[in-house]
Amino acid sequence: MITKRIIPCLDVRNGRVVKGTNFQGLRDVSSPVELGQYYSAHGADELVFYDITASSEGRALFTDILREVARTIFIPLTVGGGINRLEDFDRVLKCGADKVSVNSGAIRNPELIAQAAQKYGSQCVVLSADIKRVDGAYRVFAKGGREDTGMEAIGWIRRCVSLGAGEVVVNSIDTDGVKQGFDLPLLRAVLDAVHVPVIASGGAGSVRDFVELFRTVPDVDAGLAASVFHFGEIEIPQLKSELRKNGIHVRV
Picture: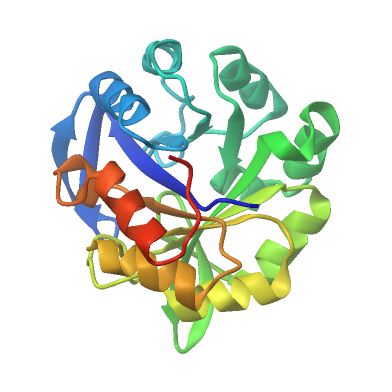
């Protein structure tokens, strides 16, 4: 029986975890190492680590902090930010990541996905797509949600999966940090288009939002969130207990 995954996300800038709303107004939260240890010990199924300004600043991802996080947690770790070349995959995986998330780098060079999947396997390659509605259409944004690429999002995701992406994180800019629930119509559109694991990101504000996500869009594989976990608004053990009460299978 496939269980649903609960995934905290660490958005890291200058070595600190930060959080904003609609990808704007970032504020300091905590140390990524301390938070990673906490989530590893308190029921998280996986952890996502994004160096959120690496792409926009045109630099490589911070590997010293990543090594420390990877060394101190005991759950799968996905890492993204500044992944532009095959060498970046190699460096991040050697630092202890289990999967590598690619976003702006794939927009610049979609063949990067195919190259990485061929060398490391599709299971290591995660497409992270930052998506926003523009004039009624879903559009792909780059550089941490700062730049409208003009590309239609569903077609982009379909293309990346065909190139070898083994998992997709759907980051809804419209619902990010708003805490009014996940972007269910967007998630349905993505799930209708591809048949790899899809992770919902952006909008979680309550336990009920996770229940609604997994009940309304049962094919979604995982729910990812940041601030509701970081600030203790939702405790993962209690969330999983409530999901089980609602007939949703999760790892104890």
